Image (cartoon, rainbow, N blue to C red; front, top):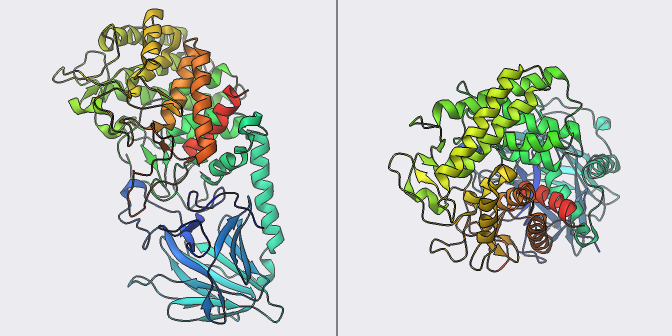
Length: 586
């Protein structure tokens, strides 16, 4: 029986660098006859996309197996290299053999029907008027060229069909085209086995470099986690806005690479130093004239995106430097990054310290990474300990990185002083002797809740006074605190503001990673291990969803947008899984 390596209802199926993906029906079920297979287009404009609803955006072409003119009930299976549409009469297999090429093969006498979406912007199946009468279909932000290699192609107003040849075989090439396609000879298409071998070599090579094995308890989900990350990597191709490899977050709803996720991915991918370096630098390719980094980078990105995200770049760079990951980076590239880091830090000095008191503020909820957290009910500009902690570490990172690329000693000392002075202001401004809080810089109103974002200030580690570290850790793990069997809740369980959802009490990926690394930096390795193990067990059991219910330990799909019923697996989460499982699961 065919396997279900991943369930496309949870994780649309693509490959690295491709904008083609296979998806299930938005309201499908994982049982025979209750689902359908769609070919999807992963190009987007990020949050600025006007319409990404299922019937006019992500899912574009419904693929059906047909016999004697009748669509057959099916079930959808996957391997690490193929998608299989399986019926009681046989099967049709699909492989993304090249970045812009899907090959479909059937050998059981079935017809493949490619159903087109109706709409006044659709041109139908345009006849290319070559000897094969190839057809060009509308495909959202691009077009799809259908080339019959084995079998006979026919067209109706609503669909293109390829019927089997005398041997019961079909072989169809489907090419994703941004421009008018140049028709290649049939003999220039790779055969199906070559396509599968290409995917296998690419994916297996990635796994071997990044995470060849995990501790026994977590090994069973290793390949799925690596696959989810691998299939969300985009590469520069001369057509998109991407300058370097980046890792997108979630197919469809968040079809973009987010600025503060790239440094985290650089840590998680650090066993491949070159890939890690490119991913780390990628967010700095998108900087406005004031030094602000884009929040999200999509296939086509609007400058500035939806604001910005917390400046975790310095914190991540310090860790990567400590591990020696970037020891081989040439001096010229080091200097390039240093200049970008300085501009990014100076952005906050110039634009996020409105009252000039040396304490930095978030300008909106979208900048925080914890958009609906209760502490932001006090309004904006919101001064918060986490933002200031990240900037203190970024100032320190500038000094340390600068030492490797010619920064004068007096300039390095100045950055170190700024960092130390900011750390002193953090403890004086955000710690009330019992807990961390944020405040509205204009009104002075303090937050009244307990949110884990406030406690990510612990990434400062031993730079904080020991008594503050100890008290903070006790609060986190106290009865009614943040600790659950599935990881840390984003809002304390006893808080009157606890609601679940996103950052009002759910278990979310950045909280687990940042806090595990924070506990380690504070000398509480046992707490890091406890949280990491609990979280990884939940992910192994239920999948790499970004949001988990802190009370039930099940995935929370309450966050919906753009016509989707919930989030798919996230590369933010899958990478976090294999990193935490490896680091703390031994």
